[in-house]
Image (cartoon, rainbow, N blue to C red; front, side):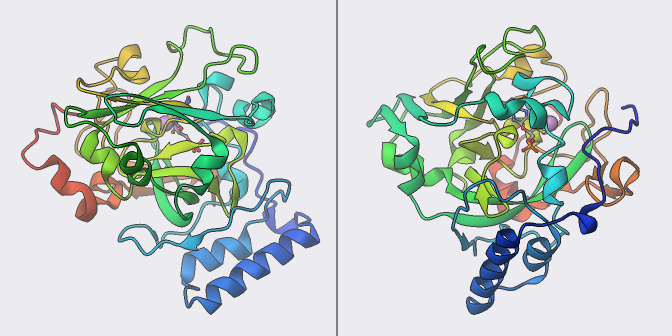
Length: 326
Ligand SMILES: Nc1nc2c(c(=O)[nH]1)N[C@H]1C(S)=C(S)[C@@H](COP(=O)(O)O)O[C@H]1N2
Ligand SMILES: [Mo]
């Protein structure tokens, strides 16, 4: 991977002017956290250190108490998390989505439930937002390209939605289809991937409580470039498993074809679990560069098995050869 001075790596964060209402919002948040006795290290740190644009609506949530849901790593500054993105529908350069994704229309939005399920149908965003209480979860996210971030997401377990729609006994996989709108997404139609961007999980992975249906980050609704209005976040898998701007969730008996697997099967397997022992043909997976302090020259940290979520998810893969099922 080339080392380049990308735009979006502006470290003048402390000198930025933060609008008063953003400070007020942050203070309220901190007070709520303190009242709940949850003012633990990293969450408080990001709330204080990360100026947010203040244009997006706040998304109220409770602090998740799920094991594994509160990474104590330093949280990535909002600025980096919202300007260094992979969202190929808006171009292949990391800086493009933040510049181009304003064209994405996130309302009205519906997610269609299809396939092997008792209650198929369309759910609109308002229904989805009300389906289960929102939680804040701080997750490590690692891209197969070798960089990582630590992000406070807002959402609820995908399992809550799955339980409501009642999958049939023969539903073994869940397929996630994302928006492919050539009118608002300039790279849909390009040959870099086949569109729509599709991802998939085995049913037990989809039902794992750490698998998050995300509507927000840093206490606000998702910025478009991070997959608004609803995306998946699967913290023990490489970033590309976390499909953005989901429009369809389909329950299937056979393993779904996924966008990256279709593009290069020898490079991107169905599972794509973070695994420091199994390298990608072009990139080592043994270590990663934390985006944020230090920018592109940041010190590398060792990559952990299942991205550090082994205690929570390791048993899902017991007995599987992870060099074959990569
Ligand atoms: N629809 C869609 N979802 C996507 C992608 C994409 O190109 N299109 N890129 C994936 C990849 S490779 C990564 S690393 C993450 C990046 O998420 P982030 O920008 O919120 O960090 O989104 C994933 N979801
Ligand atoms: Mo990625």
